[in-house]
Image (cartoon, rainbow, N blue to C red; front, top):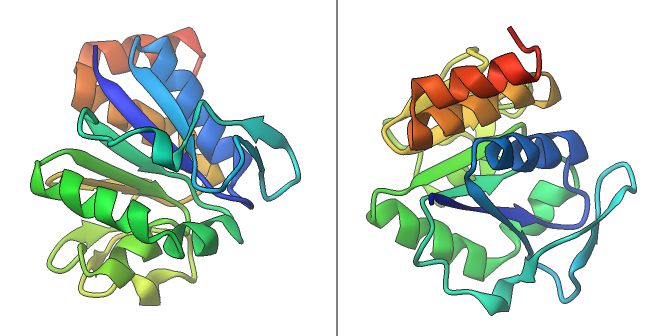
Length: 182
């Protein structure tokens, strides 16, 4: 079974995080939500509390097939402050694992320098932080093992693209059909 770690920081965008978690689980992908704070309870940008499965210090993340970073403010700013998360991203990139970021979260990858020479997208107005990337306005952009997307309105497409990469086109199409996305 494929395994995805989805990182949550105070102020994350609830729709982006929970859509990814829900649809990936519908595709029989194991999704582990991870709090980057000292508590498993994490409040989103719209003050909807979510209880993460684990805290950052409870795993080494070596078994990840993908890392997912939801957007939202101040959630992304709080993710950016987490040095351990940056290490996890770099380690997983080196292993060829997927790093998936939506909305403002691709700016973290840009600031880390990992988008250099890659195609990427993000929430409109955040393009300047995609350092070294070729900006695209597509709903979802895949370049190598980097997956980026634009925002809440693209959350289903984002999740289904991750499913396609991990489990194939058919599984992604089946999930889309089951939720009436097509």
